[in-house]
Amino acid sequence: MLKTPEAFRLIGRPVPRLDSAEKCDGSFVYAIDFVLPGMKVAVLARPEVFGASVAGFDDSAARAVPGVHDIFEIPLVRGSAVAVVADGFWTATRARYLLEVTWDMSGVERVDSAELSERYLQLVRSPGKPWLDQGETSAFDRSAADSRIEAEFEFPYLAHGQMEPLGDHDPQ
Image (cartoon, rainbow, N blue to C red; front, side):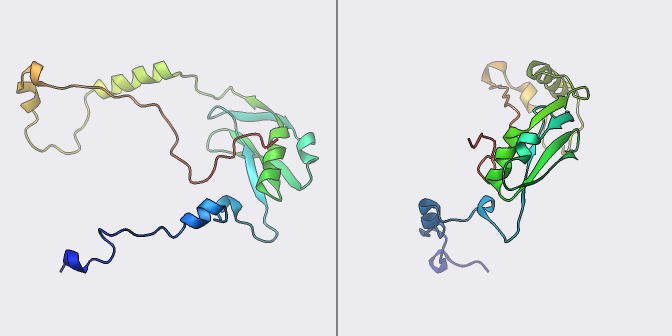
């Protein structure tokens, strides 16, 4: 049995945030701030294009940064990247920006936004397989054209909002 609204303790009442003070004064510990004794941090130098691979890299300047422990190539789902392992995030990031990476773009698919949009429109307008067929689907066709509202919406492909601050800026 559900509670009556009079018995609600939280619903419909203002509830103070428990983390606001720490977020405002800078003492809140985000995952990026979390440190364990002896912990190392790795950052990646990724290709700017999905599917590109490392053709070669010069890590001599990056290895000279105090606190850098190792630098090596790692495979990605498609392509590869260069990992920098260091004592902390900013040390690893600083070293990453000192890497000189040459990328192999031979396995990269060559497409552009206009071409993708056209391909998506063709797919949208091709017959599909209904997931659920319920109700009267011909009602729209029977309505007068001047009483219909039709619109097409197109949104760019974007990454989801991240939980942590972006680390993709030069710390210099």
